[in-house]
Image 1 (cartoon, helix red, strand yellow):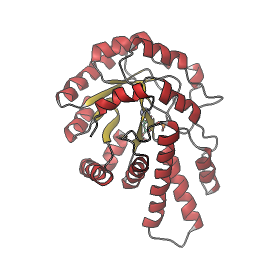
Image 2 (cartoon, protein in one colour):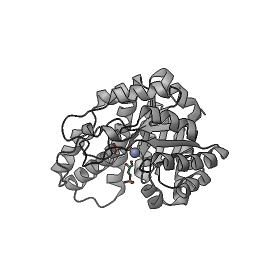
Image 3 (cartoon, rainbow, N blue to C red):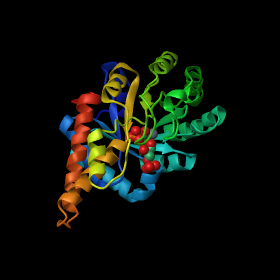
Length: 306
Ligand code: G3H
Ligand code: 13P
Ligand code: ZN
């Protein structure tokens, strides 16, 4: 089985990325794995701190190990946005393949200090560490105007040298959630190129990279939901970021949530007589697998990279 370390280099060299898909339950995990199985792709499956406590340690360990056996694809377990040393330590001790320490909201030197501490602990146990420098714009920000939030390329070099982190999440204009842009999307390729020039050997990570497919938004709104004005980063931009840059991992959570809720809402409205949850759940798994298959083939370009 290829290691994450192998993919760090291979992705950048061969112009593709690994999809890092967030999961919360068995249905999301099955849908992700099934999609990756269809495309013969590796996958990083990520748990936020919220998802970690929702599932619980035993379910995490056992469902992940079961998924690896069942789907026989390179599958890596990742902690997404760990905020403290204790949280990262818990994930390392549980056998995660990589952890993210997100101290990006702290002043530079404090971010360095905390990241270094996580690196020292994780590396002793062979676990890789993603860190973050810069702040991803929030839902309320006008992302294109928040240049001071972007990752500073010179600081990125200093940060990587001081902390020894394996990969770095960068802020170049994307944001988390389903409402990414007030006006036109604006990804700052100029900032990204400067970061790549400063730290050419550090694989980069893109957060907040959902494309918010309008078909899901329309279905949700049509069947009783209310997520008016939701939007994301278009797929051609994501493909360019995936294939022409030093990015090795692209995170997707919102699109899976939208896919899930669109399938569920549609099913419940169209088949009100059904009360066996396995029926809508089966549909949800199928729809998530189609989403993941599409992303792997057409956006992340990681088909047959197993
Ligand atoms: O980037 C992080 C996730 O999309 C947020 O996940 O709502 O489980 O904290 P959460
Ligand atoms: P989205 O909200 O755009 O899916 O971003 C997910 C993410 O970055 C998880 O860390
Ligand atoms: Zn994120």
